[in-house]
Structures are given as structure tokens and as C-alpha cells.
Image 1 (cartoon, rainbow, N blue to C red):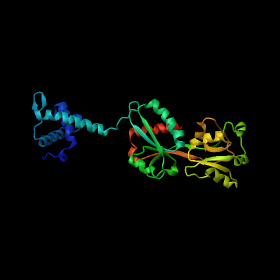
Image 2 (image 1 turned 60 degrees about the horizontal axis):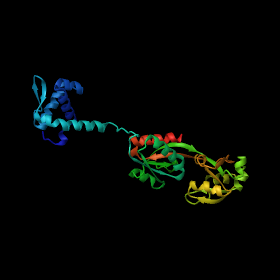
Image 3 (image 1 turned 90 degrees about the horizontal axis):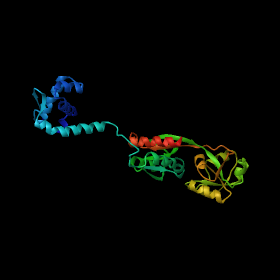
Image 4 (image 1 turned 45 degrees about the vertical axis):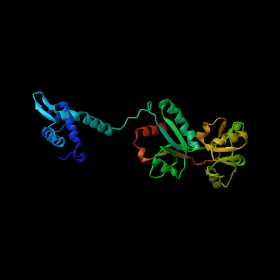
Length: 298
């Protein structure tokens, strides 16, 4: 038999390992759950492949030759490596030292990632987090290339080829600074809502959004005086002016000095979800991370 790798059956190595341990064709066959003739046939092939008897019969059993003893270490290591290859790798968050890369808006950073980071520091102190701005037209490519591990998106902005999981349903609320007159009564009519000047968050610099669409259905409109590209600017603007804003509830509840006023109209909310590429779908560390995102989002 020509000793090329393609001619070496992995099962032959398993038989070699069993014969080394058992020193008996019968016991090796029992260990491998095959017949004794099958093991004898494997031994014939092993002898042909390595051009050596490998095992010789003695009163004490099948004893390895010098060549077999030389092969013991390499074969044992190969079988150990293959066994490890076929088993899912273990992930221990307590000892893990790696970096997870997120793509998220500033809203998702506050609503999901900051609570996640707080939990990570207690459960996986060696894990680092890198956050970058999400770009709807590039995020699928970033995930496929491994430039981003997990993206916090909405179902509408998630590419069909990505895996995704909804985290929660978000709703919009009206907020004012605690010094605002409306903060005292904790109520607002639709007329007052339209009369107050609003600050709106738009990454594209627009002066209208879902709230204006609902107002238009009622033949109403509001005055949007300021459009900013970050939710984080809103609390300070409300503190310094008499303006009001419509924000996602999760953001409003974690921002100091803001008071939530019941909305005088219903504005459709949105679903926050996470998305990832198939290349990371079965990775134990990534699965653990996704479970943690779900936990902090409940």
C-alpha cells in the first residue's frame, strides 16, 4: 500500500490506539464495538501502510514493535486533536479574554449596550467591548467580514441574509425637563402638544418623523424648531429651553431630570433587534453574548 495520507483511514488509527491499550484483538474489537475479524483486517492494513508488523503475539498478549512505540505519541495526539475538533469548544466567560464589536445607534448604546456593559463587568471581566456607529448600507458587509460581531437594528433595516432576534418593542413618550410647566400637571392636551416647540432627533437633519405623520392624519401639525443627530443632545436642550420632545421610553427613563408626560396621541413604536452573520451563529462565545443581550433587554 502506498503510504499517502489519502490512503490512511482514520478508523485505522483508532484501531491502532485500541490495540496499544488493550494488547488484544478481541478486547480491541469489543472496545471499538466491531467484530474481531474487522480488527484483524485493520491490523493487516496498518502493517501494509507502515511496512512493519506493529504488534507481535507473545504469552503476554499483542506486544508493540519498536516502530509501533515510535508511533504511539503522534497517533495519540492525532486522536486527541480529532476528538477535540468534533466537540463544541467550551466558553468560560469568567476567564475569556476577547473583544466583541457592536454596531449601534446612540439610542441602542444607552438602551441596550450600557446595561450590557455593566453586566459584563461582573460576569466576564476580561471581555472588551468596542462600539461603532451603525451604517444601514454597510452593516451586512461588516458582519460578513467580521468587522462587527453584533448589530443592534430594527427588522426593517436588517438584511434578509442575516440572522436576527427581536429584543423588545419600544414605544414613544413625550418628555419635558422637570422645570417645564407641563411637568407640574403631568398632562398635556393635543393642542398644547402642538403649541410647544419641539426638538427632534434625525440623523438626516429632517424636521419631521413618525409623530408628524400621525398628526397629519388628524389634520394637525407641530412646530419642530431644532433637529439634532443624537439623542444625547436632547436632555441638555430641554434643560436650557421650554421645548419638549418625543423620545423612546427606554431612553427617557434612564435620563436624569426628564419627566414623562402621557402622549395625547398614539405614535407607533418600533422593534429593537439584534442581527449577526451565519459565520458566528454557532460560536459558543457569540451565543452567550446574544443570550446576555436578551437578558438585559427584558
